[in-house]
Amino acid sequence: MAGNTLNAARVARNDEFYTQLGDIAKELKYYKPYFKDKVVFCNCDDPYESNFFKYFALNFNAFGLKKLNATCYNGSPIAGDELPLLFDATDEEPKKIAYKVEITEVKDYDGNGAVDLADVQYLIQNDKNVLSLLKGNGSFDSDECKELLKKSDIVVTNPPFSLFREYLAMLEKYEKQFIIIGNTNALTYKETFRMFQQDKIRTGYTNFNVGMFFQVPDNWEKYHHIENGKKIARVSTSCWFTNLPVSKHNEELILYKHYSPNEYPNYANYEAINVQTYTEIPDDYEGIMGVPITFIDKFNPNQFEIIGCCEPAIEIETYKKCSYFKEYKSRQIIHNGVLCQKTYHRLLIRKKLKQ
Image 1: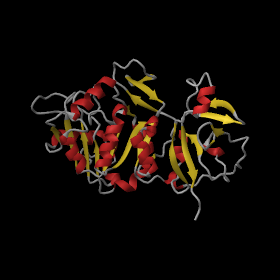
Image 2: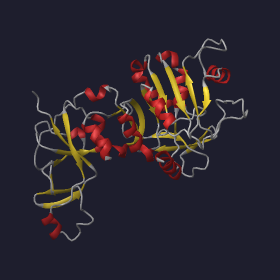
Image 3: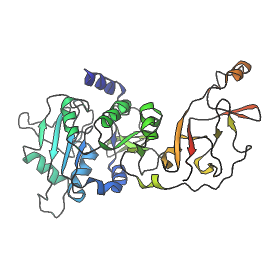
Image 4: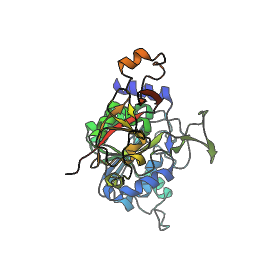
């Protein structure tokens, strides 16, 4: 029943976004050493259209993969013709059919000197052990897909943003390595935020706040442009999340600013100073600081600790005196005893004292 509920949410939210191959290549090139002799699972990907599947199939040998698994959700609205797949029973392309692809070897079947999509197509159409129908609907939380997950080492995909909490919880439960795409606001979810505090998740190499372009279904009304006959939409609040090592999170921020009460006002109801950007974090302040959530992309757990996520209300006495407290009830700055501007969402951090 849980799978049915999650998939109903998935269909209702219509968040089938297919990642561009260039964005995948740009991010995954940094993790190549971690894939050698590993089983990779793309469990939110129609191999018929998924660029994640195509990327790993084309780089199967270069990455030294042991196995590549990909599963298709029953009812995917994306349809295309780059990689036609055939079933003997129906002799139809497996659009909107739940199936799985399991690859353990990719060769240069056409002898042109390179492994390309034609070789992957040949493999799938001629090796009956590679492609098979699933008994269920192919949802990532189905029993079949969970069994494949248990046998996998690294999960790489773009899960539905609307089901990010459930998806990440499943990866954590089964203790899987992962490289996934999510909404930047997901870091404020209590489950994700806890993992950041415990250094169990971090942002990837691609810049945190640049957004990405995705292929969307033909019936999608809001899109940015059309490319090769397919609708492309930009999602500004999207980024990579992983629990694999990311070198930038081991680099210490160079702090050069000095603390002064005039430049760093306090919050109205919390003993912390407000810092406008991560570049302005003072070097000589040892207390708690509120910084923009974009700081998470620079977060080095050896240099800072995350105290909390800031949604503070004004202290009760201020409530009583302020007739407009409903409008300014959170993240309010107080300076020289006077209520000032409201800030955006804040992370509360503190420098770690050097031993």
